[in-house]
Amino acid sequence: MSTRLPFTKIVHNPTKPELVLANGHHFLVLNTSTGELTKSYPQDAKNDNVSDYYRSIQFNKDGSLLATSGENKQVCVWDTKDWSLKFSRPAYKRVNAIAFNKDSTQLLAADKFGDVYCHPAKEAVDDEEKLQPIVGHVSMVTDMLLTSDDKYVVTSDRDEHIRVSRFPNGYNIESFCLGHTDVVTCIDFLPWDENILVSSGGDGTVRLWDFVKGTNKQTVDLKSEIEAYKPPAADANSEDAIVSALAFDNNTKTLAVSFAKSPAVLILNWKEDVGFVYTETKLAPSPILDIAYDLEGKLWMSLDGDKLIHVFSDSADNEGLLKQINNAEVCKADKIFDLYTIFGLRKFLDLPENLANEEASNKKRKTD
Image 1 (cartoon, rainbow, N blue to C red):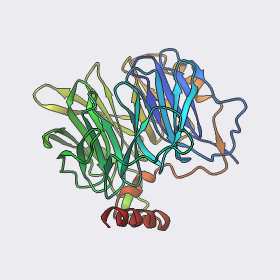
Image 2 (cartoon, helix red, strand yellow):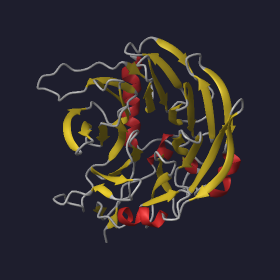
Image 3 (cartoon, rainbow, N blue to C red):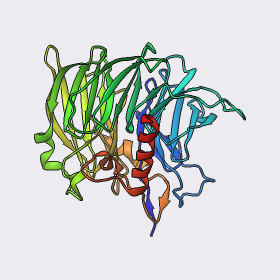
Image 4 (cartoon, one colour):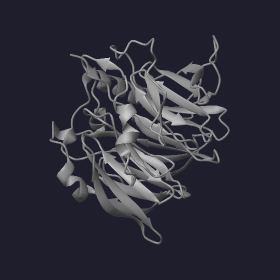
């Protein structure tokens, strides 16, 4: 019996009420003000074969372009006016994070082998010269950011490191932000003060940094708040909760933190001269895969369950907003791929043999 594939990644347009929901090798678009589906699952697409899925989706600064990358090692850029494909380029390895530069002329792609490449934002041509990485880590890059002034590229990795490098000459390292005791899974800039970096991961903490100096400004330990909502441990890697996503509401200066395989979202509020303070826990109907705030302050989440999408807001008509998307036609499959590979980033257990061999080969290549 086939099962509906959940939305594995979601991202909200920075300027328009549009939520992009990744579904297999396609994506849907939801109007977050009306609940209307403005881009549905393609009618001519087969919805019973999951051959690919998006690992990374990201808008450019003004929301006019959307970049996606999946298991097929392609970087695609879409025009958000009509959601047509503008161009695609091959990536050298599977991409874990993607970002536009400030004028959308370049695309940065961080891959699972620890490298960051800077692609021109145009169609690849035959016999195009192979790009050289601008940043290289010994271990897998888990997340990557580019500052709004294109001055620094910030990367996090599986070895608990956060590196701040000059852009585009990434061999010039500005600083390291060191202090996490487990894999760093998420990094982002504080929307109301982009001089501050926010990070989180497997140690259950949210940390704030003056990233240029590499100094820690605040550490918020959330282990006790998430303890009651941890999923049952399947192995040593999943015994402790691991942060899977961060989302900011710029209007209320709120941070939402979600954890892999858990229905709980922890809400932190910003206090001047203090930093983030834990405020409350919100519970979704089933485990949360990804989260995003819209422009009106509603918190959207994709779910691993019967309902595909849930929303927290002050509106009395949340069900009306969700009706169309939760009943939409989406990709189906006889067997759903592992939705929680994030636990495999921990090192308490060995990686699967094929991934271990790849990572070992990568480390040898970088240290020879």
